[in-house]
Length: 139
Image (cartoon, rainbow, N blue to C red; front, side, top):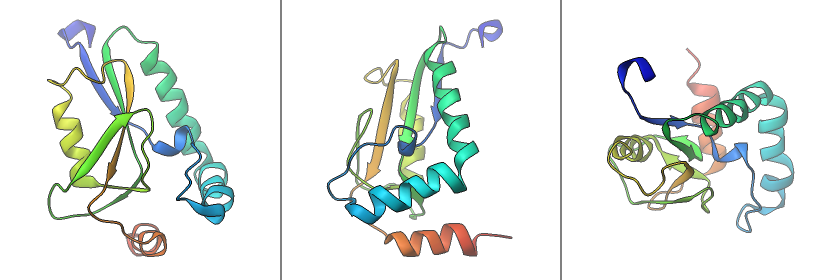
């Protein structure tokens, strides 16, 4: 990046890299589902994301770490919210995530910060999301 004069860097991590208590998550999600996904199924993935965040935060570029929640598809950008570090919400539309990323080259609000993004206009069920993303997408 230095060799080419690139100063701004945005990367995608996950809201689960730094879990927060979510009153809407419920006991099963908070105590069983999320720990199983981050500590068993995706253990190395989440370890890699945490290492990536540490490296990015220690860099000398203007960085933003974007932390979406469970990704799902929508045909277009929807109504979404952003906040520093954490936001209530279990899901992020891929279109919303792309919109957030495309804004980062000119948006200075979250420089040197983690940015949480969550879709608020649509709420897929956890079971449908796991089925569609984890089982039927295998090709």
